Length: 459
Image 1 (cartoon, helix red, strand yellow):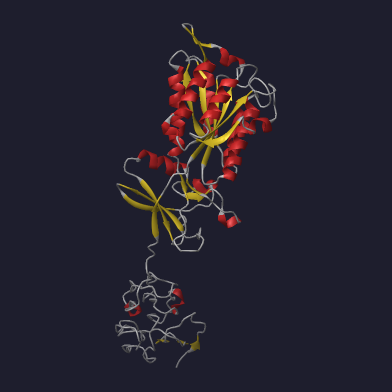
Image 2 (cartoon, helix red, strand yellow; image 1 turned 60 degrees about the vertical axis):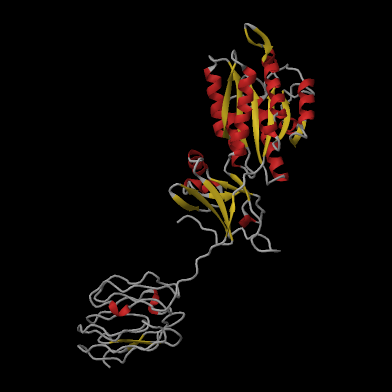
């Protein structure tokens, strides 16, 4: 045999004997698969059939091209005396080989045992053949559970500065404070608020007035509790406080987001947000500039657990800059700003704003994690998938591990606490762009959670 050399390490699970006439290569490997190829033949002789245990697999008769040898179990077709590359090393049982005549690689299952391949595109490459009788691996079905929104908690940080004691209009003696507190009492008494958690604190602090320590505002005047059980404590507190003093918005906002983060650590299964209510801009305690307030809101949003900030601004229609500042602040905190315009029905506007925040939080893209699909076994967090369905079909949303990766996969999702870092998550959160798309199609879109199949990442 002219120019014969040995070619070893044919693969992990080899498939018979491979012979290539005219190429000077012999690879003898043992193991299950297609069986042995035909004998080594001189040039210009039609290759012999290989024998194997899988129907339709093996060499088969090769076309009578010059230099063509016998097909083999791994499906490598020789051509014209030049070595053609292996597909998946030509060694794994059930893989197809390369196309002949220097053609492209054949087979869609390169490297994965048991996958079916297709013949090459070269003129003499069809000896690779398809692995007949080798089935595809079963598709994981899993268990689908309708996604359930997390219950909502609101921590209201209420401005009680002296400016809140001014009348809402020239023809009304009702003050901003009276209008706002009336709306709050109505909200916490509303049957539609049942199940919502509400807590309350004021700034400046009601006990000692001017306080610049965030910890003073992180400690609530009325701790967060579910309605209607917390309705009476909230109503009593609102009736016991009067407006006076300056506007220490910086420490108040910091304390509010700290209380929300604390609440989320105690009750990770719930969604909690800070609601800043104000009629002005910061006048005391650092920071007093917008950029400093935005930094507080952004840091809270990016922390773990993530605390979002909503704002209800009580402003005259011509206080355009103040309104714009509050919108920018809320955007930095991942929430939104709602403006109640002084001079109109302030109580009704403020109540609508609270209802809108309640609705936005309830319709957020934060969902409870379903229980394990295996009795008496904990949930495998790496076998969870989020599936969105709309009029265009069904899509499995990719897992991105943390919100910073949403930029590369805007329709992705992540846990509130990364299980790969040793934590125990309680909520599934969809990236903001994907959430916005779901809201746009909320009439037809739905979200379900699949349990039991390996979690899919970005493609």
